[in-house]
Image (tube, rainbow, N blue to C red; front, side):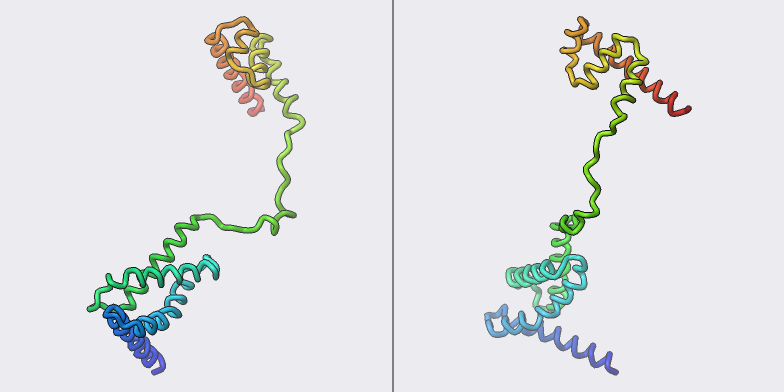
Length: 191
């Protein structure tokens, strides 16, 4: 019996919303104030239940956006329809908008995690020796070319001048050298 009474009371309250909004649209400012006073707590609970994860302040911002949208668009409400579903739809859309604005990001203060965050990665001290060992398997001129471009960061043109080669020849030798290094790496991985 309690459930039926509660349902009837909710239905009456929502019918009151329609009457109040109808009167407000006709120019009754007191009815508009009563309407806003009646819908705000209900809309707040709708926003909180649908906006799980937004946070208290963000939910309150959404409630304010819903009330503003109702105010600005109340002339679009069809007076032959109940006001409650119209208000709920606005609330749902504003919650979705809040999630869209937020995106998939989660904001956490870094200070809370400073002690458990990993340190910046350091260069592997054996890396240079490993690279040199690989390059030493190339013929001397190709090794010099790979070192100049790959390790020293020189351009194709600079390397060509240094080795007295055309840019096209440098590119071809670099391609062939890198292909040999890749094949050598594959053989070493198999071992």
